[in-house]
Image (cartoon, rainbow, N blue to C red; front, side, top):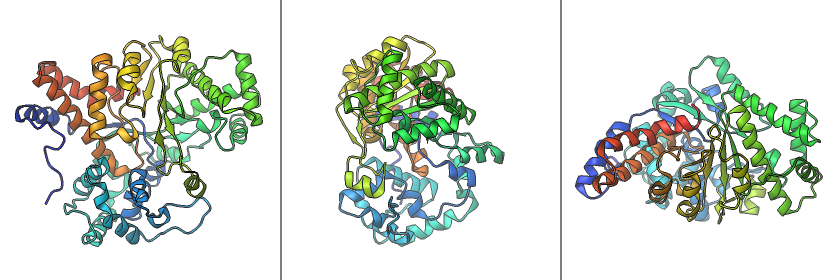
Length: 468
């Protein structure tokens, strides 16, 4: 029996639900634009079979293992590698059994919807996953993974992915992207420039990272001008491998527009490791403005992901390293924080700055009004904890009246879990069609306009915003 209700996420009232169904039929099979995410380019470069269901669905997906961790399950038992090389479970079937036995934990979560969609639509598994069906499901998916049509490139094409962006650090050699290019495969897998390790004085090994940046570029990164020029060189290198955007994950949305002398003095302190937390935040803020100026030069879209207390668990960070599900939303202020950047470049029509938030309270009060007037600003979709049906609906309700649809950028899936990509886009398309149907039913949007907006939100806006 199918686990997927064909009318999931549509309005309850039948007339409005029918409008949503009709809108959805026009967008459900559109190509996928995935302009920001964290899938591994090595998958597409080597095109080898995924090792087993656990390594496909569990170990790379922090949405999944954070929930299991919250119930006291050890990350080692889920196959999460330890930074110190210590023991971790490697038997995929054992990991899968733990996952299946605890599948009830995901009831009513977005992860459950994505997983059920992937099991059924990608692998043809329609039974409910639990302790009793665990082995049968594992064997079924493992048998599929052994077939050529389930290799990464084949799934890429089956998912109708028109373009996908991975995200690499500024020091990455992009060898997997080079291998993809040299293979002759036509799938569009591009990179994005993520310079956090060389712009954040509080990042582990910052001074050494900046030195490595200099070695890569042949610039003297002990000087302010050499450091900036090194960024320009690396951005050009990333552009050569298809990058159309940079991505910046900062604790706050603070920006600064310092004089060259003040910026150089702050940079010198950062290299010495003597910045106070306030000075480190100021330096990060100034670098956002510098990156925006570079975007005016080279055309890269500037993405700002702020408001996350990253790696909140010090013990988990120490044992397993970064990005293990402990990024927690914080209160974030934007009106004053973004003013230095917006005073410098906010009126530039050729610049695109995409803002993501984890503080929903700012959407109606701050972000929508800002994006609704500054030419350079666009609002990114609901992100991380709000990448969910209710989060998406609230985002539309709190931003559309002030920013409209066309100061937003459609949807991006921002995922490490490859098979969740079509599921996530399907959820976004259903939620947007439900919202548009409600506007039509309440006389706020003409039906023909709703069909056009549905196309824009599902496909065109992301392609346009990310210059794809």
